Length: 65
Image (cartoon, rainbow, N blue to C red; front, side):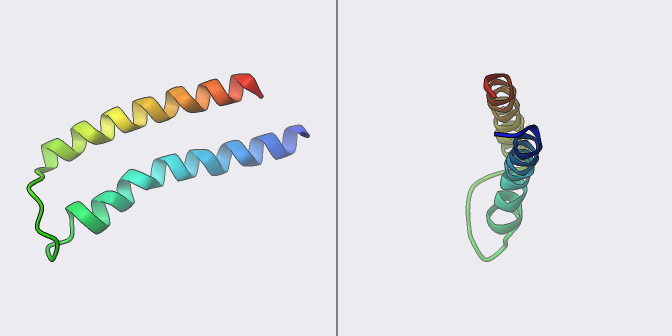
């Protein structure tokens, strides 16, 4: 692959990793019609774990490319 393609793939993956938890918050946690027993503090714990794992995966993928 050319370096330009690698950069585009990396940017798209980064955007996807960053937008996924916000869509979860928007459609599930922030939606009043869906009744769930989740507080904002629980969601922030999930968000921290998710982003930490996502950045670890991205660093590994970039190093492998």
